[in-house]
Length: 189
Image 1: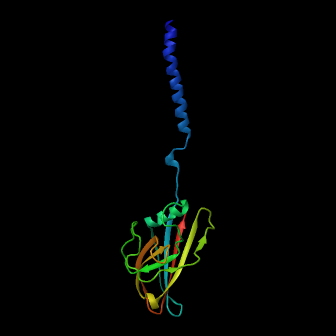
Image 2 (image 1 turned 90 degrees about the vertical axis):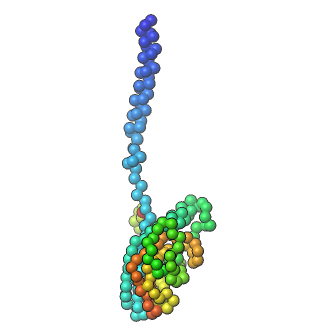
Image 3 (image 1 turned 90 degrees about the horizontal axis):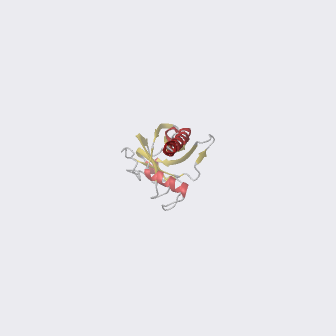
């Protein structure tokens, strides 16, 4: 009888140990979350080229930018169709004269120098699987935009709208007879 009483106490303990062993084995065969890697990024690059009245390159500047919070929010709305005033293309470029460093909370250029210019057909290149480059290119003429340019941004409207990204750089000088070409490239990987 004692052996039956012992068996009654030992049997549940053995079952519990076997259960823990199966439970532990199950979790050991799954890939730990720390080993899963998502390297998706959105980055930007701006190139400004000043041409004189004869088409000669006078100055060229290239620089990275900051994708701002508002731009990330608008991209999420475009992907998931939620919230906001509607999603529209980021196909307007604007230039300005302030060199204040970009920050994530900015929603506009600090000191706009001219009206925004639209690229009606941005160039999309997705030749590399898992990587897409979108280039928005616009020209500003010195007759209406002469001065020292130190910032550029990409927007989704002629006025107002949301800013996707902003960049600052050393002074780019546009004389009255010059043309400034701005090429803003956004890369999604």
